[in-house]
Length: 218
Image (cartoon, rainbow, N blue to C red; front, side, top):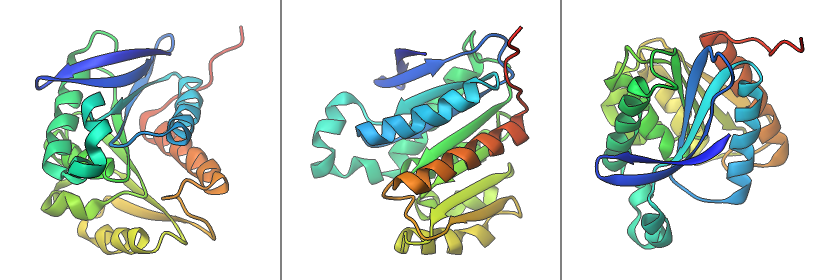
């Protein structure tokens, strides 16, 4: 696992890349925020997937400069901006020597999930599955009706408005989405007990949709 920087559509986006030996697939994690707890949660899921020979790429959709001023600009909530960046990242990974040709899936949290859903609709031949954590499918607009791959919408029982947005969005997908609710906890606030279950759901979801097995100890 190593830090890297992706140059797409004239921007430099920070990321973390992990490619196990003989990878079976790749999962692109995207988000539009910063925070140690968030990174730790993503890293735990990535490690579980790496153990099953699934490569992972975790990218912040905001540049370093944008993260400094995000509170004032609200760019993290601009679905058009996020869409363009996720699609550009998908196109980059599709031709990258380390990840090109691998079955692929997308993981998005919060506003980043809107960009993931739009990218899944725009690149159906590349995206095999989508995992949305406390996402904002409402920001993806009509694109949710074009998402053909299996999609898991994960929310917490106490996530309030975000939970309701996902409940309303589920029937808008063309029979491809399923809502999973973590009882008695908040996924949006990344409560530890909720995130432990999210990590299990994400691992099982991607292994089911992409294949993957534990590395042999021999």
